[in-house]
Image (cartoon, rainbow, N blue to C red; front, side, top):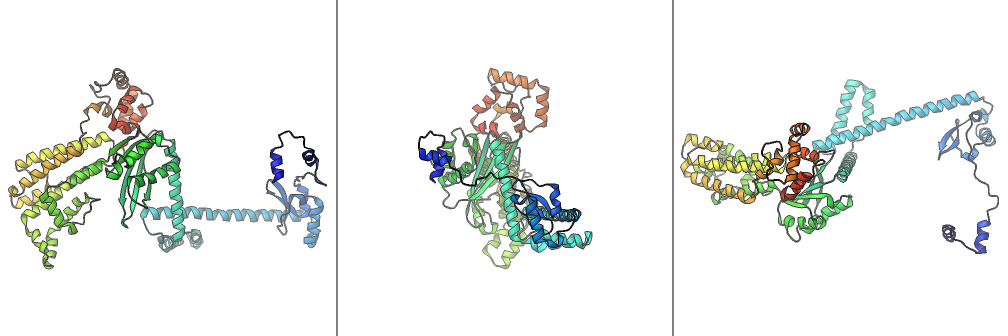
Length: 546
């Protein structure tokens, strides 16, 4: 160890004679290593050459033994031929050249055969990909895919081609590894794109799976190749508790371990639960400690679901009595609309079944008033489901969602007014029930009350639906928009309106991509967007409530 330390200090001056003597000494019989090169004339000794560690090494064409570079001299090559192959010692150079050519053909054939596993490996990945997409058990590859593929290939291409199918590995463990490898590769590509993006936004949702284990699901929206991209970032189990600190710890560990920068996060969307939105220990509060500029929003889909859950006592009790029959859950509340529709369609069959079982609920299915209530609930939840689905999808931005919610709120007002006039066509199932017996008066007050309360709930959960001051964002080429902007912003808006190229881009591109393209040319209009708190995340990365 001391001699290594002495070497490291060799640049320091020293007057020690011991050190000088040690440095001056060389081992006895010290000769530099000579690197030898193969010559074509060595074939007469039965040797060709291969590359090993960057040097030529002799290889016998008879026994295929490979010697070191030091043996690349005529005397040692001849000695190997005389001692190991005395019967071929008198052969000519042409004999050894034919052996060399045969060896080369064997190597080429081996290389050609080696490419078959590579193609089989690709086939294994492709089959595993289809198994994963179809959500089938991993054993289906070996139990079904391989035998079926082999039979098909045998009938179409013959037995020789069918034998090649046996080289494709598709055991359950192999399929599992292939899927894991592909998942890691997709994750690596996604993270690489996120790191290259100037901004990104997150959407968080914590829920439980069928095994009653808490799972954290995180989506991300970022900029890639001048367009907005939405992808699932990760799904991880919450092994301990589901408090804000635990959720943030899982999220922060993932962000830090994968080289993402919190400073680039401009928006966080959550479901509004206390663990997410708590002012002190909520996830959004902890995120703002890392990135104070982050805009936190409450998911509009969750808000709409909360509105749908708010029902009058009479309607709510109706659902509670049939909780076991409807099989609804608080997590997927809007699925109640589909269940109610099925119950209504099968009301006669369900009633007959309950009657045969002498169940106390059988009488409900013979009550005309109760059936009308069921028809109304099915209709109103169908409208809510349509609204919910219309707010989903790619390239959807917050102004569109606000427009849809505002329009639905006004529809409720229209339905209430029409209901007072005795019109029920907006509720198809209820209207069908009333055709046989036009007796709306018995349930009309209940429906009127529910519609009034429903409209109030929308106002409570969506207080920021008026966005006319953002018409210049929605359509900057519309006349008269942007009059409330500053002078510099209005000047940029005038330049935009009089640009034919930008107008063509506006008509061809989604709104989000258009403003992303304009961001590189604008200063003041982008500043105006930054001043809008609810739209700051949308400007930078269209942080939209999913």
